[in-house]
Image (cartoon, rainbow over all chains, first blue to last red; front, top):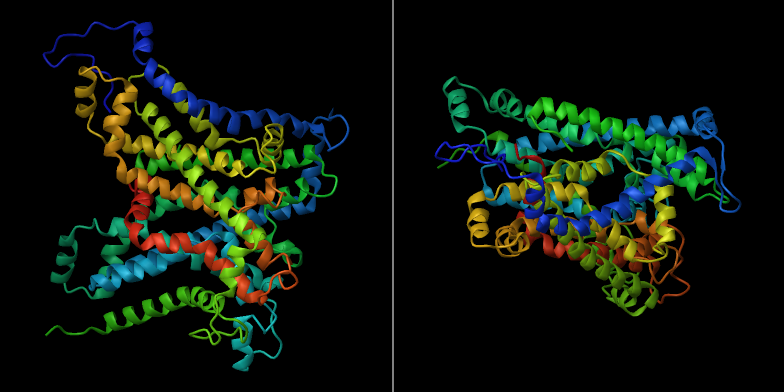
Length: 317
Length: 277
């Protein structure tokens, strides 16, 4: 919507209405905002007051006592914390680049299909896994990959084919866990990721392809010199929007990890969960970890917001 | 006669393989959910077909109750979410309203900073929302990102439509109900589906806030059934895997059925958020 006009259409300056009149005229809008205001206040702002616990010794029993920055000192000296921080960045970023890459490749080649019904049905199929919850996906894959050949389909197939002698505990193996985590993410989110790229591709000017035809370009050359450059801007936007969320990685790891692979899979949120719901938890310490996560996450949102403004002229938030 | 290119042949073959890679796990689960006993290798059709897995889910209170909770919370969460995001989006779209900047900041700040898991947990506990399935409705009901999406959508509605109604003496609420909402059906469907998926699929909120078995949702129950040693053989008269697979199918069925018909709304939902330049 345009800004309030300073001039009428006939060119005469408008007399400014006093602020109090403006506010009174908008009373309907303020009333309509009240429900949203109350919910946001309770669900988002009230918990922010609890950040003070990060500076307190606070357990389930006994009075909280102020201890300053002691929790942060403990946290920065804890090995598990840094492992979790590094894992969060590695898992999120690699996952982001992999799923974006597969989504770009899939949409480029889907775009080459001339049979509309085939393209549409393939899209329907590859979007499917997106609607499954992480709890369901973890359930399906942990059963399929189970080391028990009685229900582990993959182990059963590999044993029958003589590729392995002993069943493998895929999700219990430190060396395989990450590869499986990325594979499951690619399986689940690639299709959904293509939506935004396909929307961009449908907007490419057909004249570009015609010009390439006249120059005698092959199919692959057209993909490489016309289609891919047209996607570049969208790829950057998708990467920026998702980089802002890297600290949020939680549920996908939470449902797939286990104590055997903690070193390679524990992320900040799961680390925090472990601290918060341990026996006799120190709420103060867990709040401090959460505050660290919020600050880093907020910083990333602000950075990505600036990048987004530069690239596409509007921010995320 | 059109010439068949090698490129097209390879392209179709690769995509058929990809489709199989995606469908095979789903097919295995579907097939084995109808299988009374037997090999749990991959097979195309159940060798001993039975509906016992599904019957057990609907007849056992410990399983039917979470399923019902999931249905209730999904419906309520979607309705609450739609009410709040349309109200918020509509107010935010009023550019010449005094205090709009402050309201925008009030909302957007929550996207940058949050209290974190423990402070949120303690507040919910004070409100009596731990061990209470309504936490799912409230947590998903207020979603600032969707408010911004709705605002972007409302800004696309031509202003002349409001102006005419304002001159006719329509109140903001009247304009909202009589003009804005009827023009936004597609956006409401898209965003409503986003809410429904997020509430139905939520596992971690239940894991964090709820212990009482009467209040858990189906995703949580399913997780226990499949992974966390909630051994069904002792209490249910059906093979463990049959029940587990049937549970997985129940958890994905609502959206699997609805989605081919509503695909355009799902797709539109993604594009409202991202492509709008």
